[in-house]
Image (cartoon, rainbow, N blue to C red; front, side, top):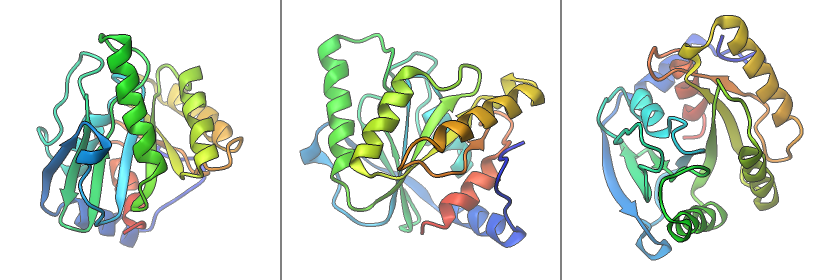
Length: 213
């Protein structure tokens, strides 16, 4: 199961496949607002708690295993990483929030950078807010959602690591995420369930993001 309230046509699935099958390359790693690349193509950002699977999802969407560096150690992504998808879409991998084995001051600097980017980027079309399906929505996720509501930045809940749950548990997690989304003004009403390991939900997420191009 990938979504409880949305179905995609064959044409939408194919449009998403074609978009993400195009050339994709690393553009920049921004450690400060001053080092952000100039405005250009529409941007999709991937946010979530540390070790939720942001880099793995970017790799799965683009069909590449090493585009975004993946680590089992929380806090691996320490800057905003930009990936150019055939000049049509920019994918942005954000530093994780929550647990990371770094100093409190460094963790705060990452969060401040991500917050400044999310508030002031006119090319940002949507944030995929990733939720580990095994653990559900945490207080830090709700805090992020509230901040995004205040900033009027549209975000969509995307469950990750669903391959580690049975179908009934995935359905339960998806229903909980969908219910949570209805309580937030800037949340997209459709939550998605994905697995970077098996590819489940990846075609549907591609199709959804292709509508923003």
